Amino acid sequence: MFFLVAALLLLGVVLGTVAHAPLTFSVAAGAVIAVWLAVFAARERHARRHHTPSH
Image (cartoon, rainbow, N blue to C red; front, side, top):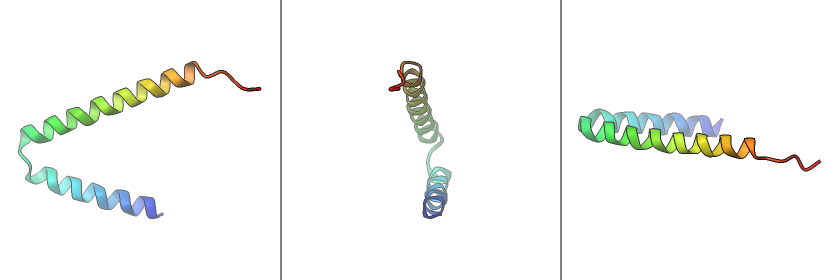
C-alpha cells in the first residue's frame, strides 16, 4: 500500500513538472525513458529464454 501511495505521489510530481517544462525537454525525457524500458524488456526476455532450470 505504501508503494502505491509513493508511486502516485511521484507521478503527480512528475506530471506537474512536465506541465511546466518545455516541450522539447519533455519529448527528450520521454525518449530516454522509452529507450531505458526497451533495453530492460530486451534484457528480461533474453534472460528468460536462456534460463536453464536447476532441477
